[in-house]
Each structure stands twice: as C-alpha cells, then as structure tokens.
Length: 440
Image 1 (cartoon, rainbow, N blue to C red):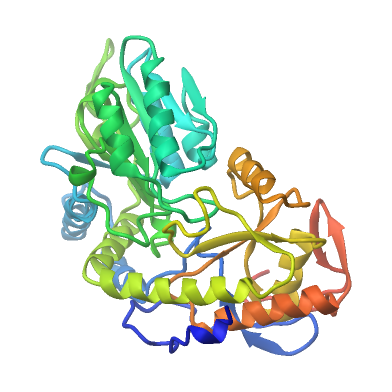
Image 2 (image 1 turned 180 degrees about the horizontal axis):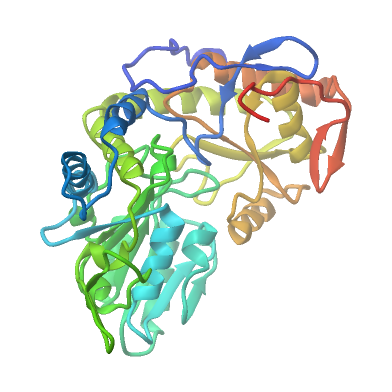
C-alpha cells in the first residue's frame, strides 16, 4: 500500500504543543535541516504547558514540608496537590497512594524492595529491564505468541508458585513494538490465583488513558520523561499496605517521625519512601503534563493513530524491511515500530539518518535484550540489533515522509558520508557540525 493513500495534514487535530518543534540541526553534509524527533519512546520532548508551569513556579522555589515561609508553603501545596492529580490520571481507587520517584525504574525498584519476604514474582521475559531485573524469587515466562497465550501462560506460572504472597509484573505497551498487552485479562487471572499485579505503564501512559480501578491492577509505575515532563520525576501508585510495612526506600529526613539515641520511628504513607528534599519542580511538571493529557486524549490518540498508519504504510514499501511483532502486525499498538532491513547494519542506518537527514531514531536492543532478541529471531532477521521509530505529539506527516524517503535512499544508494565505529557505535569519519553554544 502506498504511503500516499493515507493523507493526513500535519495539523489535522489539536494536540498539545511541545518545546523544540522548530529545532534546526546541522548536517554532516553541510547546511541545516528541521529536526525530526522519532525517538519519543526513549524520552519525549517537553510540553509547552509544562515549560510554562515550571517557569511560573521557579520564583517560588523553596523547601517543602519543613519551611515556614510563604514560598515554602506554596511549594508544599504544589507538591502535595500533585498526588491527587496523579491518582485521577491513572483512575486509582480510594485509598491508593502516590510515591514520587525519579522514574519508572526507580518506582519498580522501590516496589521490589517493599514486597513481603518470600513473595513469588512472575514476569514475562519480553519486558523492559526495569520490569525484569529488580525482583527476587522471580519466575520468567517465555515470550507468548498471542494475547490468549499470554493469559494462559501467566495462569499456569502462578499456579506453580508456592503458597504465600505473589506478584505478577505486567506491561501496558511493549517497549520494542508498542503493542498493547491484555492487561485486564492478565489482572483477572492474577486475582483468581491470589496474586497482586504491578503495571509498567511507562510506554502506555503518554498514549492511552489508564484506569487502575477498572483494570483491577494493584500498582502502576510511570515516568515523567516519557510523559513530556523531562524534569526527573516519576511515580509509583497503588496500595499502601506493603509500602507501609517495608523499610524506607531511602533513610533520611522527612521519612521519620522521631529519632533518639536508641531508635528511629518511621512515618507511614508516601513520605516513608521520599526521604530528603523532594523534586518539587519535577513533580509539578509531571502533574501539569497529566492535567494536560486528561483533557486532550481524543486528539492525542487520533494524531498518533493517523501518523502510525502513514508510517507503517511507508515502511512496507522498503525492500527487505522486516517489522518486529509480538502478537502479529495487525495487533493494536501505540506509535512505535521496530524493524530490520536485510543486509543493512541498524547502527549505521541510525547514524546516517541523524548525520545526513536530521532524523533521530533508536537502534539496539532497547533495554529489553531478551525480548528484542526473541522478536528478531521470529522475524528471521539477519541482524543482532534493530531500528525503532517512535512518534509522538511533535511528529508531523513531513517527519514521517522524510524518514521513509531517507530510508529508501540509504538502502538503494548507501550513505553519502563515510562512517567508522567507535566503541561499538557508528559515527561520521569527519564531523565538523557545530555544537550548540551552551556546550563547553
């Protein structure tokens, strides 16, 4: 199918604006070009609304919880008020709590340190390393071929776990392919087997609404830097009992009720795991992004769906391109496509796209080594790595068309510049592109 069949204007729907949408970058071949950021799955740009909210807060920046001054009171209200915003954003239950963290990885490691001793943890080996690696007493499930296989495999794995607490680690959207997992069905099986569930929502939260109460998921973890709020905040959201019973994730000020020469009395609630001066700016940024998305979901989904169709149609025209898929190429997904091209080195293609065409993509195993290698084998690829293209709010039809044409040119004619490998990464042999003036 020709990419021209899907003709969506660049601004066909109203979506939130992002910082850097007009960025121009230098080319190794000379001159400059508009930058096409097609790596949203790694880190998304900053929402314009988030930047404005941060600028508005900064004059008031002061200590949180422990300051008597007016600015401290303002920051405390901002920080604590953000908890309800996050609870509303994920459709949490009454009594759920929000612990602010650095990112999804930090949130899942926090939960891993808080699960009761002896908890059996079940996780699919296709997931991102943040969801795969933190756990003790872990049982890994091989990559399923269909959503039904995933549900059956989780049911069987939980049935084999010994008596005691159990936790199933679920993924909302695949880090490699963007495909949606059957979260509600998996959570239903886990509940029947007496297991709690945690949802890695990092790749899902920027693209689709989440309703923990409807999904019947116990915990969710997400990152601000994927939600267009790149100021270093994330969150673990969910049930309080395991968190209140666990040792604090960090020991320090704010996590204590009282300290004397003989003992420490720790507080309960989110503060138990938020010792030290918190990232008020990051939390305000994250809450602002959540509020923005909550009122714009229809436009966000329509924008990404239209561009994803155009992208996949264009990629289908490239000879030798093999799209990676977990559940089949027709399965619903967010705006992510990973692929290989027969006879082409993914790392070299990514370097040439950047240096010669001002296009940013990701190559490699995407911090999901087991899953990506499995998908490469399924696709019959002759490469050990893949290319990943991920679209988002700043993506336009021009970006998508430019990528497709650049890939066609690189496959048919090869790069215009020469490249070398340095520490396993490709880079132009001669690169005289000027760096931004703020760099030393």
